[in-house]
Amino acid sequence: MNPPGEWYSVELPTRRATTRLARRLAPLLAAGDLVILSGELGAGKTFFVRALCRALGLSERVRVTSPTFSLIHEHDTSPPVAHADLYRLSTEREVREIGLAEQRDDGRLLLVEWGEPFIGLLGGDALVVGLGLAPRRAEIRATGPRALGILRALSQGGSGEKVRK
Image 1 (cartoon, helix red, strand yellow):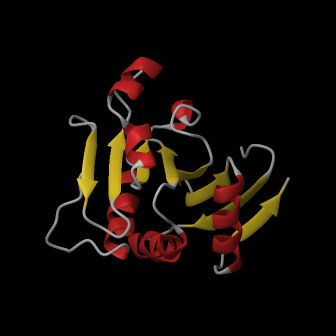
Image 2: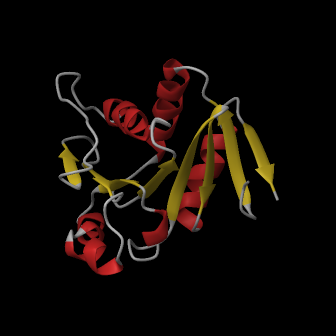
């Protein structure tokens, strides 16, 4: 179920479709943006991050894996990416201690798996990408004005379904 507000939905029946979405999103993102990835285990969060990093210039030779145990992986992209996985964290104190808000302030694009409970702590104004398994699709919403601009630009350039509630 989608929350109230504007959101964008697109079917992702194949990995190629997921890669196309990442390629469409990449040029809309800038240093300091926050993208939250949510969805069940196996929904494709890390695959989406990998596709997005490639679209932002990361070499195919560089592995992009889930930072579940290390918590944060940094990637030399343009803008630079901090990819975090907050699955194992449960308190605001734990999230504060890993320094994601500071990385955002330093100009990194934050890509955060399992970060929805901490959007406010990470500075708010996030693009939330919810990935579903059945059916395979992305439902994307914004939590602030910058993310809303990204959402609107993304929805104008694709074959997804733009919905206002």
